[in-house]
Image 1: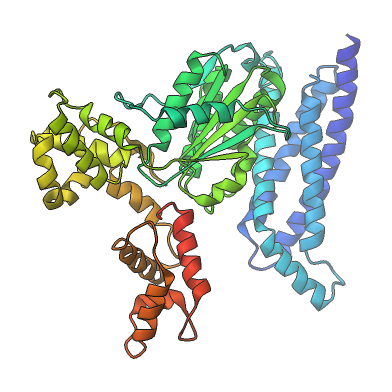
Image 2 (image 1 turned 90 degrees about the vertical axis):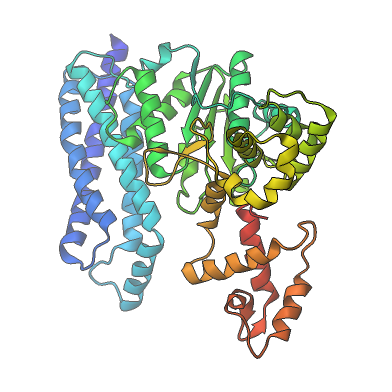
Length: 501
């Protein structure tokens, strides 16, 4: 009883302080929006969100004053007040005030542009907290547990993983062992271990991650495994909402994605004591989704596994595992495992020739096997036909195909071929269409050289030899009509970060 009374007093004080601050900041934002021109959309959204928090707090205050308050509500209120206070401090630095000199106004205008992402983050936080406070109020009115994560605490073993795993997973034992050791490794830093599987499209990163999760779920290493599709903001949001609904037993309760994310992260940080693993699959475009760290729980009891083809994700990692081509034997086994015919020596030798031509790329090998099966082409005969029908092979997708993903901006899963998976990386090349076209031309030229060593000197010599009629694509490697080694190396670096080289 004493604890409940104390919680009610603390909640009352916290709500009163929060409301006072929220009203103050709301007035500042309102004044700016009403008087300024070309107001950024984020300010308008914040203007809408702040007043919505006050009536919810007032309803919670009424219950707290009658002694009906939950101790779990207090850190939520304190967290929201802290974020609004930070927002208030940011407004001091970016909003013009009467009496500001011209120089100060220019500085604040520039600061408002550079801090646009932070403002967007505060907007999302306000939406998240509003949803959480609404849940607290709804639970109290309906006489349900006031902590939105309380139902989560009773859940035991929980695995949320996609069902699409290839039925003929072969080999790659060394990589599977490294993944297992990396996510389970001891570390001295605070927070979860972050392991990145990095490699070009079609190398089987998703299937390796999924296979690892299946193995880890059967040996009791992790009691909670949560699979997040990080292809886009939409797929990431759908994953969090789906998990939140399943583990809380509240279908469609999380209309606000931020609220769903916060419920899960709160459960991991404060409620679950067992080991957990979160997989962020297909995080291939960090520039489009730069705030991925905000979805990482701050808990030492777990690990995060990221699959990506973008080199910038290495900055997130405590350990990076490069996913390269399969070994020759594993590649041959993948190809031959899909045929019922005997694996005599002649077929094995032909298979070696085929997988070498396919660059030991798992997706390409699976496609070739599916094409051979569809056309009833024996392994031995396919060696001669491949060069003739290469494009058809690498575009072929069977009706039943395990390699799928949701592309950005779509809800339907798309079956992947070697062509489509590489196109996803190519789309990120260049700042505009002209630069993309020029870089792709250079990238195409690279394909005619041995991948082990492509000398810059060859391209510089060609640049100097074509001074009278220089090709357009060379614009990406020149400065003031002169060869620029730094421009060239920057292009190569971009292709390397996208795992295209």
